[in-house]
Length: 414
Image 1 (cartoon, one colour):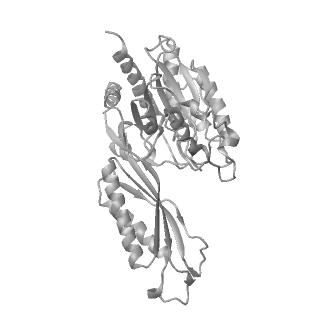
Image 2 (cartoon, one colour):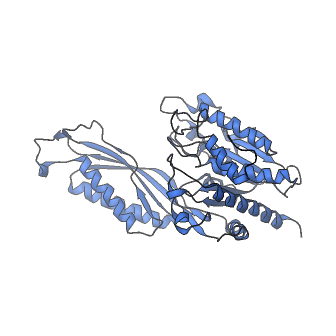
Image 3 (cartoon, helix red, strand yellow):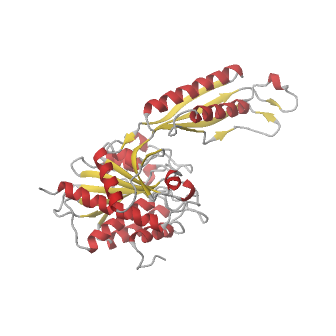
């Protein structure tokens, strides 16, 4: 139950916790909320109620994004969009995505309760498919809004064989696109999903940009054999080769700058058995860095080492690139506004790069973007142990409110 007397930041945190359980989760234990599932629809209905209470007009677009609009001093004015995503990974935490939406609602509620209208409208977006945990594509709904969506990407099915086209009108989906004249800027508040702010003992930080990402699917083929009768020197073991490659990727990333990371997140051994030398293995490789050049050089070196390992182990190697997201710098002027609002709220401005992808990187094709990170305990995310202190959410709300006011001051005629 959310206390009616709770302050805005605390209420935002409490509302995230409300949405972390049934009927807002697809699973009985833990939070799993996938795009267009019953839990997703239930969460949208609850969000629509909170948006309406905050003084917004609410609609749902053709991509099933939920949007609340608070008009500016002039009806129809371009909008500052504040948003994040309402979907989750499997067995998620409560705050990854929803907290940014809740803080946007609270920022509007504060303006509405005081009767304040800005020289721009404010729209709060609850995007639907940032995580890509249901269909084999991510950020479909923000790409639709940004106008960068390839319609071919909509021809997807989930693990149960349900097509996206069974749930929504794919022909209408691209009509969710917004024009550049409609949108002034985009602001996203999000938990850091890392330990930097906690290590710095800071509640919030200004994001300077989102790291460039490359993702590959790697396949290895060797020779299956009996575990007890094949001498070690005669083996073409696809699992041993994979293990050596995983460590090679780790070594390359460890030797690079602090924002360079390499991750093997999925490993598979088809037809694996306890008494069989693996003849095949598959794994994913994800390489990220703040600058595309750093990322690309690291990925090239990792793949060079993979080829060398495959060569001396006599393994077949296949490499398929499945993802290439460029670095997405945040707008310099908006970043400075966030820093100024942070200082005004009595906190030290601090800047950092986001290693994780966010809807903000997609919206950058439509408008200038800004991001504010909130401290999360232990840097834990994509995990039920996610935790945000209400006091930190209060700081974030104060910074967002200051940002909105300062943006309004810039746009007011002299």
